[in-house]
Amino acid sequence: MVPKSFYEKILQELHLRQTHEIREFLQINKKVKKQKIDSKFLNSQIEQIQITITDTDVKHTYKDEFNFIIKNRCKIYGRGYLKKRELFKKWLDDQIIQTNNWIYIFWGLNKSCLYVGRTGNGGSRPASHFNKFWFTKAKFIDVYEIDNSNKLNKLECIAIHYFKPKYNRKKSARQERSHICPICDNQKYIAKQMKKIFCR
Image (cartoon, rainbow, N blue to C red; front, side, top):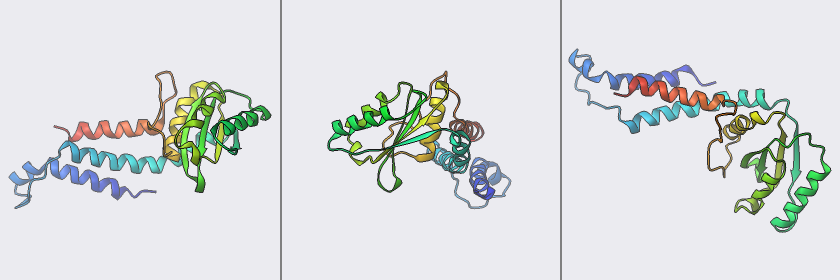
């Protein structure tokens, strides 16, 4: 757990910069060089808090959301992506998967997460990644069965925060109709409040 002093230190530094002029006028600060809160500095402080609180919260959030979801694992084998895709589809035919709504995760060596995605159309979407440049590194695919398609965007987003895949272009894929990702909401709240307080 992150000590509260970590957050306190960041907020105190911002407050000192914000109140520099009045402190100088009141002779609280003497011969101290004025340090402004420019957008670059403020954004760096916001990012520090966002990253830290995400690392703290995401483990609990992931466990709460994924704990009872059925997971299926497919080992990727064969020569060339076409053969691998064919064997993946054969594996799917042999499975008893109750839904076409999935969160899928590609894994490389040493438990490295390569890519997290979602699909409402079964195996066609993950199979489309077999010709991607990073696919040669993939050793396994995990398929999570999602009972409600409205949860897909939220769960994909949480999984991206949790596993930090190397080849996802976006942090998350959200739509207005989807459930809300609590991690994204926390990050946005932090940014909004800090900019509201410290921007002039």
